[in-house]
Length: 301
Image (tube, rainbow, N blue to C red):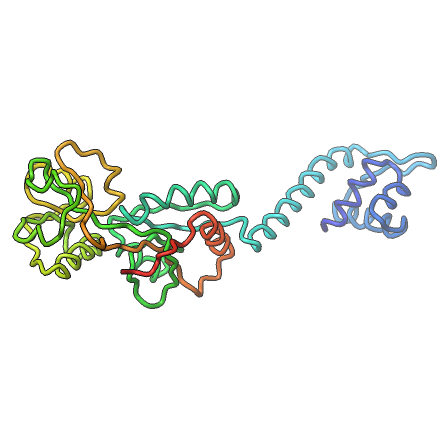
């Protein structure tokens, strides 16, 4: 049973006239009649009562008409789905994000993709730390990831945001009343940070900033997430180096202060495998470029 035979049958069934059906299908009447005969032979029934004055559906033809219409509609949908997938307007893209890397940019991207590419399903996967999202992009577990730079070789990246480092202090701390805090003023202070060996980009950036300021960090406690870090800071366990997006966390006993002077910056980027053949990923990246423009001062400092 061929789709062209079904189309021929539906045209004749709706017109009840071979000549008009042939005109509708842009073909001669003889080939049309031959296609109907082939379909009847395949089904083992007669679909039309071919009288001398009119054409009418047989009971078998009447029963066959609606399923034939459904089959043609389904074939047309399948054809459009294949074309949409080829163009990148249909598919699935997995996106990894963690904490500061996705806090501000992820909602902007997901809303834009759902508006521009309703046929693309974003599989959002929250990670504990940026390093894990990067590892999963590299090994193919993720298609796209929000990560903190620098990134390992083998991935393509585009900076979408720059997170400036801040100092988190207990509200009772002598430095809490200042508008800005110099990193050098934290010498000897107990430090709360994220766990070692987890791929936390905020931890690495904070420790690097301390060392650049001539401070030997004295880590007294580690915590798994920004909320817990700030809770420990508020409990006067120590101070912490955080990022801009941490301001979105409500804290009653901890304050965030800018770092005086040229503030260290953590570049946030989208990362993907440059050899990924997915048309859907290509379209998501196109949308990302429109709604997450690269900051003018995107070079890491």
